[in-house]
Length: 399
Image (tube, rainbow, N blue to C red):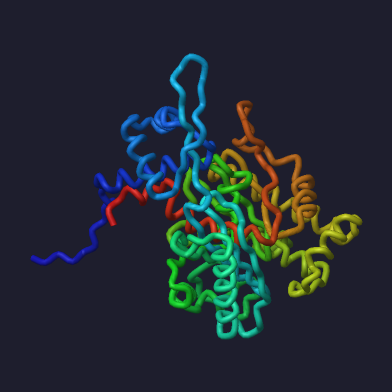
């Protein structure tokens, strides 16, 4: 009898998968701690010294790590530290927003080498894809001019845009970029660039940036609450970015609040779009960032009112995140001016009681992260680096 029912099972592993995982563990240890000797790496990773030596030799041959000056420690044997080679790998990150597109090139340790932006014309992907492909090509040309091996060591293109993905919309929801989400973006970018392309939502991208070079660096359990045009949460659970079954994990902006007898999504009350609407500001205005900074600086009555109301809803969001995910910390980040994020943090205190109130805390329950319009593009660029080099459960599995 031919049984065609689907069979559910976890993927197995093999020696090649284990070796790939150990290699990623070593790279991650050097990224988090900086230069380490072979003995340091063996102690930290609990791998056999010979295994560590074999992997270090392999990474040196591949141009990913390099030895540094030998260190003498008292009467003991001298040790040789090893560090990541920044030029060992490069990646490009692309942010697609409603009115702008930004592209960044980074090296293996997250240094930003090139960054360019362009306005997106009206008409959605029909007219916008050409602008985007031209922007990526310009970034690659500038990168090649300063890093001669960049094309050979370019591990991929990461793209980021607002979510959620895969939902049936009515075409006129201003909170969703529905035309772009329905467009075959991955295929278009892959064909147009010749690169491996991945995509994620903007909150997840901002979270990867925080993990690579920001407040989540070295943490295994952190949630980044991203304040952009909408609101999202990026989830670092067990040292990996959790995306959910459909790539929509962390879409906390869609959580419903009971306001005035009706249900209202969180992002309709505490996002930058809600601020633009409250102040009657044009989100396409190139001077918007400076305008908001000035309003916050002068303590404009309207923006103070918005901050107080938004902080109340965000305070509840932090409580919910802490209760559900038990993170080491919650990081408030976004594409807003830093002064606005700092005022929101201040207005959110004191936080609601939660299980996160522990006497042995090392990091604060809530802290400020990147407040930078380039953070999403940076995280998008960090995405291919993470896929290629960070420890992941999937790396030990058979394809």
